[in-house]
Length: 222
Image 1 (tube, helix red, strand yellow):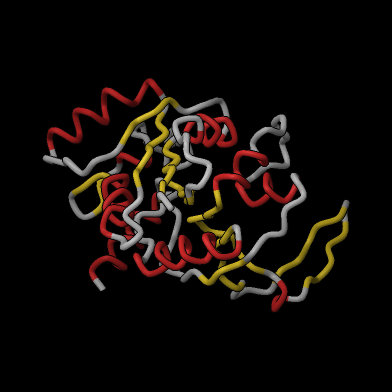
Image 2 (cartoon, one colour):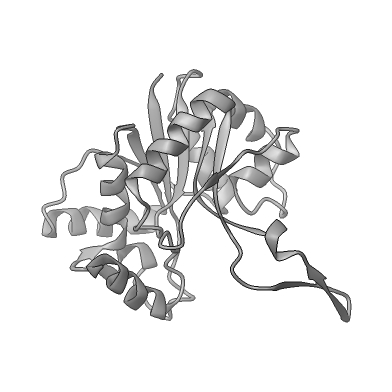
């Protein structure tokens, strides 16, 4: 089987309070996106890497690659209006129905290679593998003006990579867009597929707010 990684890099940086897209912010001297690509490149799975990037940011990315002498192989394709459409654009470049495809947030630069490899292996055997961690906190659900307590042991926080056989993704992304699609697992589930959870770790953070860069720097030093 051939492996692919679709790295979704469409963020604008608005929640980072930065004019620079968060995937381009420096982490240990390199843009976040470079750390993410390198993790997949170094994995035993060795996927072909597709970076889905808004057209407005592609020239800036080329400049950054030159400045940092970043030559790891990857293909850049246009991002879409939403994450759903961006993923769909990336999948359009995969013409092998026997492929295993990991979809990953560009701004999760600290993903362990072992998680990446396990995700590919598990999806190849069972159809899909969704990386999650157990909630460490108590959780309440707001319903109208009232909240209800949920069982913490039954709550999992979803991360990426989310890895699938291409046949599953192809079927899932034939659906029209729905606002309830927050990730690839929700798209596949809406298409009637069972979702398999695999263990992530708490270091696999998503760079969303300014303090996340400082946390990621600390984790890298460890």
